[in-house]
Image 1: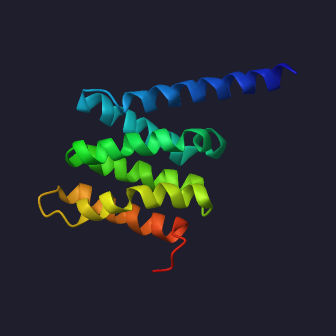
Image 2: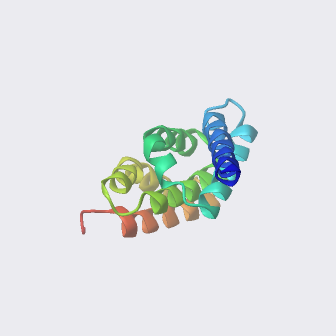
Length: 140
């Protein structure tokens, strides 16, 4: 019994930290946003969080969109990576497709922007390719 309670407590702690990182994506400070993106990248690449993300995918997608639009270089690159991981977590169902469809134009825009940093463009290219492979319903 206490082992299950301990596991439940750890899960809630992880979710609280994730919520905090998601809130920090909207911070005015670029450093805070980058730190939040790095923490989310680590969390999404180290555990399955699909249920947690399912309820918050729209919020996270909006925050990633802001980071991609307003951020520069490193922030855009991290946002692209987190987006790829979000798509992986959402899978090939309607939720993953929705995330991909909403950010695809922005990814293409950054990818084709010759003034964007090479790391941001590379990250957006990877996100576009992976999300398209995983979640695009339209074969074109």
